Image (cartoon, rainbow, N blue to C red):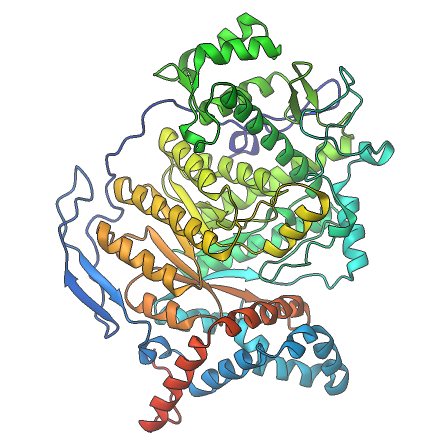
Length: 640
């Protein structure tokens, strides 16, 4: 598939040197989503292997499709207290290492100074002994190995016990804060902004007819005090832009992960990050444009008395909308009439958010992508005065790299998960991921988008994207996480002065996670084209998922609901699930010892809060060690 076919009309240059991109592969449909169920992939269900951790109870018959026969399913319950099943893949040395590492993570001094202590240890013991000590402790607990070959034994062992792998090359630059801030400012500030910087403007507030003003919001501009995006982040890799050659190298790394995942299993996953694939300036600017167009829709909805509703519940009366757009001067009367004809016209004479997005696509296809509506002037005005030729090329290369990765995922039979990032990048990341899904998810789920459920808008994001997949008939793929950037996001919002995007507390985030998860599970129940990765270390969330699956009669062998945890954490969740027949995956980091130290540093930080909040995992580890000693299994070795 050629780049132009895969990402239609994504890069064209206009006479005034402003980026012009049309992201629509096909028009949004305004048809009612079908509730008919599709045939389960693979035909007959597979029999779940017997396991002492599973209690099977007969359940009601589940109709999987109007074309398939009724199939008898089993209600499955998992005993997460059964340490024999949870740790049967670990020898006693591995259990002791886990106990040691988790205990060390509870000491504040060791965690706060972990980077300095590792640097000191390297100087005192020398490189070789330092690496041996790391492999016996933190590195051995959380990292699979140094390269593709060295990680194979662990991958094969986990597979033997029912747990798959998501390969993640976790090497990062070891930059100082000053170096990171400089790289970020250079990468996120356009040449136009460097030549004539202007203060960030509030939404829609500009000088009348002054096209020389850069209509930027504070949230979507780079700020030096938050230039080091590693601050306040405990579980996500961070990439800083250096040049295009480095982005190409990082793409090659992702390609190697995809190939290794394809070779390791028939249903592997691989993870990528958009900020590794290009200059983040484009993500910032594109995000701002998408957000402002959506706010424009909300403004029009408010004029019709429909504010405060769920995203897809806001249906604008067509005649009133035409009148409002005419009054605002967005287009002349004939143009506006043409916009709302044929496929774009809702069957009930209303326009929802997805229909509105279709209008934007058509509008920008004859204008420019990076433009925003100015309510005061009624004009579509450029976000920035100009882009250099090189900036336009950088945007194009980022999109090309994304396309290359998606095509290689298809060729290698690997599903590609696009990681979520900061909220000032995320609208663009989600939109680019959505475009990949529209193209590559036609026959099966290949591309998965990540939804951060600590965000206030998480449910709206999931429901809007799900509805689009229904209307266009492709497979919806979602990974649900709670989120990795909470402290950084809160601090940045307060300091710079915009609304905190994060839910008010942990319980609100839990409710949001379960709301989004239940919504996707219901879609799977009614339409087998939806798929979800429950990426969580929260045992209650896993139990909630199992309960809903049992109520809906969703079988684990359908491979519609996946579970994911990090390597070295929550084995008492991952392995019982895997041995019960559920598709479960470990995020498997790998890379040379010295180069994954930043990753290990964050693992220590994350585990401090995790282990202080609950001693459950340590108590289960002790329980299994005592059981083995009492049974004379001092030299226990896993058999597989």
